[in-house]
Every structure is written in C-alpha cells, then in structure tokens.
Length: 406
Image (cartoon, rainbow, N blue to C red; front, top):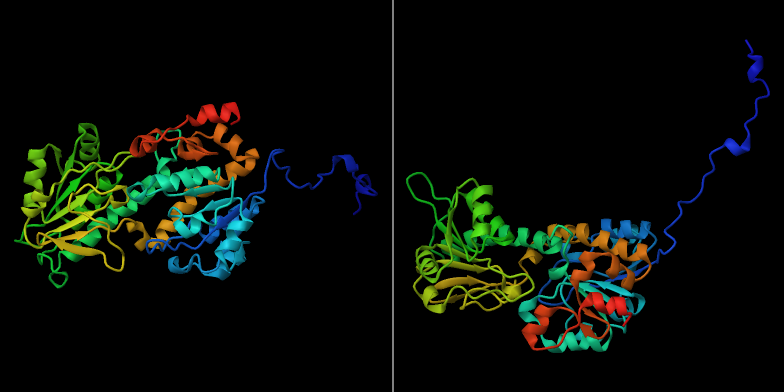
C-alpha cells in the first residue's frame, strides 16, 4: 500500500549533512621530524615506535626515520614505512630533511656536525657525561635543546624520567640477582632464599622512582629490603606504599656504613633532579663489603653515587673492585629496548603534536610549561641554572628570552 504523503518526497539540500574535512588549528604547522638510528654507547632504543609515527603522520606531520633505527628494538623498516614514515639511508640526509630531531641519547661528536642552525633537538642529556663544549656547540648553532631530564608536567612530575626510572629500578634487581649466582663470580645466593635459608639483603640508596621500583621488585623476589635516603619524606611515602614490608633508614654516614657492610646487593639510586648524583658510598665502605657481593649503580647516567663506580657498557657490563662485582651501565633501559621505546613514544608524541598545533617552537615554549622547563639551550643562550652552576657558565631565564623575542 502506498503512502501518498511520502510520494515524490524530496529533501531540502540545506538540511543535509555536508561532509567537510576537519578544520585544522589556524596556526597548525606541519613539522618535519627526524628519527635517527642511535649509535652511541650501545644504545638499542629508538625515540619513536611505529605507532607513534602513525599518530604524527595522521596529524599532518612528516616523519623521516633512518634505516635500521628500530632494528635492535625489533621494529622493522617495513613497520615504519607502513606507518607513513619516509625511510632515509644516510644520517646526513636525515638531519638535512628535518627541522626537529628526536633521539634517545645526546648527539655524539659526529652527530653534532650534522645538526643544522636553529634546529630543534629533543633527547636525553645524560648529565654524568655532559661537557661545556657540547652546550657551547649547540648555542653556536642557535639550537633549541630540550632534555628528557627536565621535561616536567604541571603536576610537578618528570614523565620521561619516571618511565625510564621505573624500568631501571626493576632491571637493577634482576641484574643483581643474576650476578649473585656462582657462575658469575657472585656469592652463590638467591635473592628470596628458601625454606630454612634466609633471603639476601638488598640495600637501596635512594627512595625516588628508581629506588621505589627496585624495592618493589626485590620484595617480589622475597629479599630483605633496606632503603636509605637523606630525606625523611620519601622514606615515609615509600614505607606507606609498600605496607611497611621494607626497612627505611635515614642515610647518615653511620647507617650507610652499617647497611653496606651487611648487604648482598647495593643498588645506587640516589639522584637530584637536574644535578649530578650525590656520592654516598665511599671506597672504604665498599672494601668492607662481603666477597662476591654485587653493586648496581643505577644512576651512572647522572654520575653515579658510589665512589668505586665507573661507567661500563652492555658488552662489558661488570668489573670487580675489592672483590665486589660492580655493574655500572649508564643506559640500563637500553637492554629493555622495546618496552623503553614504547614508554618514550607515549610521552613524546603528545609534546610533538602540541608543538605543531601552536605553529612554532617559540609559541610552544611559551604555552607549554613542560616543554619550557625541559629547555636547556635556546637560541644562543644557556637556560638552565643547574647546568650553569655545574660548568661555571652564565645563563638566561627562558621566560624572559621568549617574552623579549631574543
């Protein structure tokens, strides 16, 4: 049966939904982002996973990835190309294509030669190996340098640092447990003990993020855990979170000496934001430790907090000093390259999108507190007081520089 009222029905075009492309922010800038292959210090991570590249490309940005950049994190070139990246076979070509370089470690000498004037560089700084010459070179090039160690969210947390420190703290205990074994020259004990045999004693210096995750992991193994810090507040917080299953101690010289002497494992996790790690354990304390004990200095990228520590590599990770095994690899998360790459991607991509949305790095620094706090060189000025103090250099306040248009 026909319904006359519907016969010949037409729709007024003015009432129809019109498909239109989503209007971009009027200040949106298409960034050219370069992701080089890491070559320094046996670095296995890559700054962006293919999933991050896909998100950036979908937001209108061009991403250039050096061939083989993700190989050691098990991300193939084909995954990057499928995500929309353009693969570049030579690092010099990649640097010349990009106006923003995002990488894991700071540029080495060869990479510094590839940087272009006024380029944006986002990477770790690794304060333990930082030199004033490196900073001066960036300033000469008028590079805007943003360091992972300094990027801070509005709530006061350092998201990139926190994620890498969670990985570092977890790995520190796994590594220590391996080197305690007899075939590695250790004491021949297991962290958790067994029925009738007491667990190993793990002493952790520092109640920050590295110390927290080291403590969580050591407790998971069943170890006896002692955490020392120079600040009572973090010790209270950690003791509360871990339901008093750890022993917390103020890090006076007396208590450090006693704890280190009785330890099967000492994990150096003491650090100060934006500064070199404080030296808490002296050589004579190490000399008093039990033969075959293990030290994992998990803050070597910040200079280390144990006097006998010296940087080691993934290919030669340990040395013995006073019959104590020392593991002092600065970039420990590199050995969990895939996990660490995803962690970096999750934090970095939103910042990169924000830079593009506001149209320029200057405007991004003005509007975004996290990026602004992360900036250590801007144009030809050093903008971090802690670095200026460390190297006896002058610095300028980043907010004043941006406001003045220098």
